Image (cartoon, rainbow, N blue to C red; front, side):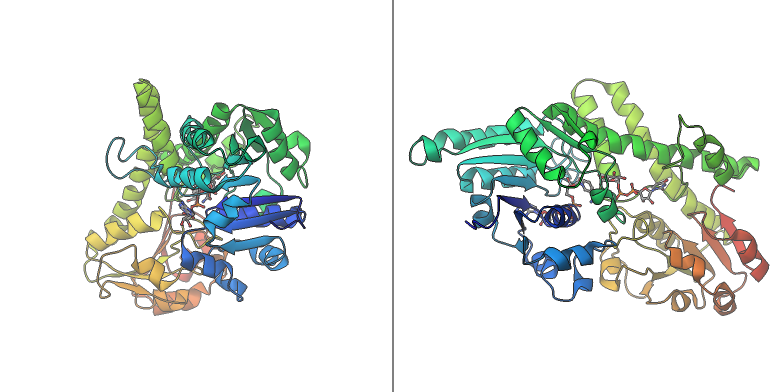
Length: 463
Ligand code: NAD
Ligand code: UGA
């Protein structure tokens, strides 16, 4: 045990949440030692890479923090057992994807990584350990974790009461969004802490109080905390599906979705955030968390509640099919022997994460119609793009500039709102494309009029 530090924290899971979250805690709490551990060796090597541009997660501001803290009070390793053993607090920040088989397949969360983390904690923890749910979990998961931990409390009394292994459990869901993770962690709207005993709730609150206004720290019980995280994501996603459903109505009526979004968003009861139309929400969480909510509702016999929330996911999928169909229709109903450039592969700007990216489904639909696709994304590499498709290299090309991807293309489909797409030399791009040269702006963020003045045919979502 390193006596230099007031507290030892272990975080299981060095992913998009574990890495940035623990980096920000380390940066604000020099008296706490944080060990971020993962079973994935490659990921840990990348976190320890001297070249900070090779960190496994791209987030604006992350490199600076890792540079400041790594090796001082922030450590990345595969030493799961050792780090649990010396920890006062263990955050569980492992993946909780949708189950692909068995009961609840396609809806319920697969909790096998949570269970294995709980078993590891149960086995290797010493003395009293506060276990923190950082992953997004179905309500009542703390019950499962407690059962696993309690069974070791009973079975592993190591040498008298002083050394007795005990646990308490806290829910502390994470609300960061990728691309703004560091800013969100540094300055969150709120921190939510659910628990059963004041000691543990205060212990976790005290960490956050090192840089967060105590008024922003909401404490509640375990179940409200677990459920609030699912509900927050469902409400956010619901706004996106709502505005996207209206984008289709705009296209048919002469209304403009950006104008409508502004008009409704200025009503302070509605608010302006999360009303940007687009190709549907992507990312690893919205879909899985809503489907989990649907599963839970149906599990408790609330069929109507489940059906209501499932519509949010249905509209999202419909929007992606709709965009693919519109591209095909405008390109004379066929894509065979046509080259289409896809600009943007990450699920949103300022991240290299491609999980559930709308680009994946839309590209697959276009490939099915016989298109050849050339991709350009400022942060997503060729290997990552290829892993999403079974297709041969004759149909898929990945380039390192937008210009190269556009060469000879019949159309460009803009699917991620990377700011650099607004700064491209569209005159040069127009010259090297086959005519008529189309731009499909699924993010409604390019200057339609100036593109039309260059000679492009432009389809802008919701206009
Ligand atoms: P991720 O897949 O990027 O990272 C999870 C990591 O946990 C992986 O590297 C995996 O190897 C590791 N892991 C799994 N089981 C392990 C074990 N037993 N021991 C050690 N390591 C183990 O996932 P993520 O995006 O960081 O998401 C983690 C959780 O946080 C999920 O529940 C997610 O819903 C939630 N969440 C994610 C975001 C986000 O923006 N990605 C935001 C808020 C909440
Ligand atoms: C989302 C939530 O915003 C976070 O609070 C939450 O912690 C996280 O999920 C999670 O639990 O994983 P994230 O998915 O990283 O964060 O990014 P968002 O900014 O929410 O974007 C999600 C998707 O919705 C993206 O594809 C984005 O392009 C799309 N979106 C977002 C829109 O189409 N319109 C909008 O107005 C906002």
